[in-house]
Image 1 (cartoon, rainbow, N blue to C red):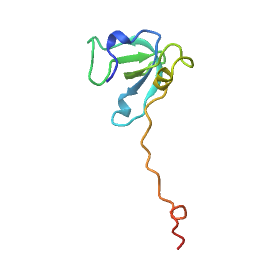
Image 2 (cartoon, helix red, strand yellow; image 1 turned 30 degrees about the horizontal axis):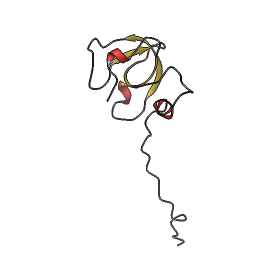
Image 3 (cartoon, rainbow, N blue to C red; image 1 turned 60 degrees about the vertical axis):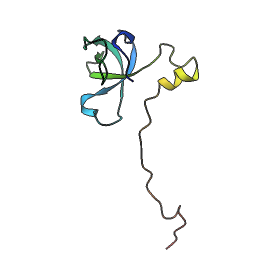
Image 4 (cartoon, rainbow, N blue to C red; image 1 turned 45 degrees about the vertical axis):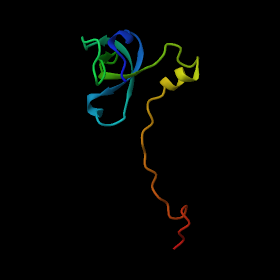
Length: 97
């Protein structure tokens, strides 16, 4: 579930997805300069502009106490893991043809 507009604050660090990365798990970290979506919620995330001008939809919030706090807070700092398939190595699999 993506954060609601009321949860996003100007100056807050967030993980968001840029339009060019839709369909992937490539998130961009940035600091919110403007909130562009006027609706209180959006199914794909509230659209924001970062301080560097990047426009993206917020997927996850980063708590203000970024290296401190509980394990749950620290997990929010890391973007979701990318799914990478491991290539099979015949030598590791015991095939010595």
